[in-house]
Image (cartoon, rainbow over all chains, first blue to last red; front, side, top):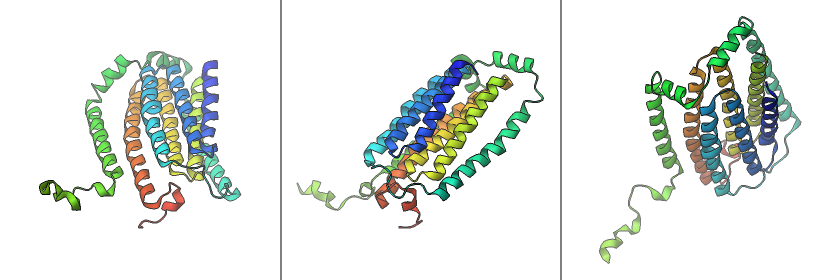
Length: 182
Length: 100
């Protein structure tokens, strides 16, 4: 990892801890924005240029604006109730360590068989710019790409249905005939 | 090789932070944000493996994860709004009943 990558990784971990650490959900949200930005930087370092830009546009732009909008709409106060108990904190930390333990071993075993030269050649060949990603998306993955647009459409319709107020149902309201009486 | 292990380690660390956040936070929106962070951690390892294996399939997978995450954000926040209307709270423990 280069120096730049190291700095970005530190920022990512710090802002990640900020997301779960702040009591005020608004601070958590801004922390997550910082986290997503650093992730975009890491993608750029890994030569995934298209993903770096779409990360900023889709995640840090669209999704986080939606989250912040809902946070402002609900006008939430700082998380109340009792502070995090020792038991719950221990369980959470234990679960985290367990995940770490189960994941670390396979990661390191995966690379034992690969030679360093092979890996370097692979790394030099993989550049995710717009042209190569587009070639894949509209070639091998065309069906999935089109289906994903369907998923988005269903998502939008579902969100509108769920967020609609009860009073706005399709049945005409009580005082509707008023139009004729005038 | 060593640098790639660094990226994978970072991905793992962020995933674990997100998982801990899902466990300990009570605000549904913060839980939701922690899930987004876990998705991002997995995306980072997708990109790293794509680089290691020398093809773009991993990056395509990340693209689709982003699409699904966008749909999930819209639906998930709408559900949180609907829950807020009926129980006037976004604390996960307040929405513990299946019927109200």
